[in-house]
Length: 300
Image 1 (cartoon, rainbow, N blue to C red):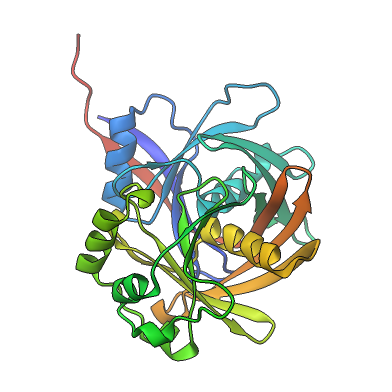
Image 2 (image 1 turned 90 degrees about the horizontal axis):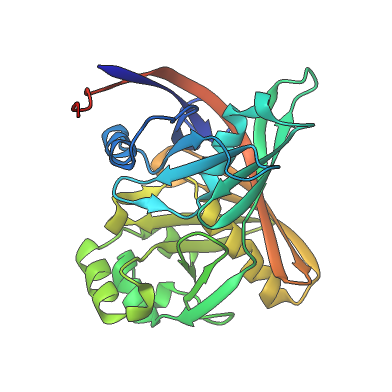
């Protein structure tokens, strides 16, 4: 029986048992795709990453990201957490990961003693804004009244920058607190909206002074609620910049409070020649380490 070492980290937090948990397999050579998916399902976290040698000069590693049911082209907290785990492979604090969505640049953050404390990543693609969804449909999915959705600035809108598209939904304070995903409504929404491609993730947000408060629901992938979602925070930052007309902007996002796992995501966005580009970063804490036991592969 073979083994595969792994470590878990809590991402977008400065203390254990906050933020979003992530499992990282720092050396996934020899694992099959089926084993990676099985390990991600077994660990039952929102995502698990598997680190492989890079395919192109100048890259640090190729990283595969799996949620409970499928591989993902890009995800934010897995890139931040994997960068933190692989900090010793960085050059002057810089890493570059190959993921299906493109190249992800990672800046490792350090404290005064030189110890890694977290990381900041750049989304692999510029902001892409998709279509709008009916507020009533979104309200059903979120388990809230339609008047809890704020549409004065924008309707619920699809957006992405390399990851799975998220529906960005501004809501009232009461609606954010009351939201509870309705799985049957999610399934109806996907069946009625071909543009979703069989996937639906809601990223609810409200303005809270100088910060944003958010919640993310993706029950069709097994994530009933996510305590911190970097690949939703970056398109939200980019979308808010797009709406503002400014050259650049920065937002702190507080997520996971309702789950008892408060997370702080620091985002920035700026206009570039190829579109709006966004970054997200935060702290990380190691929590567990161990070895997964793998069944023997059948012989020839």
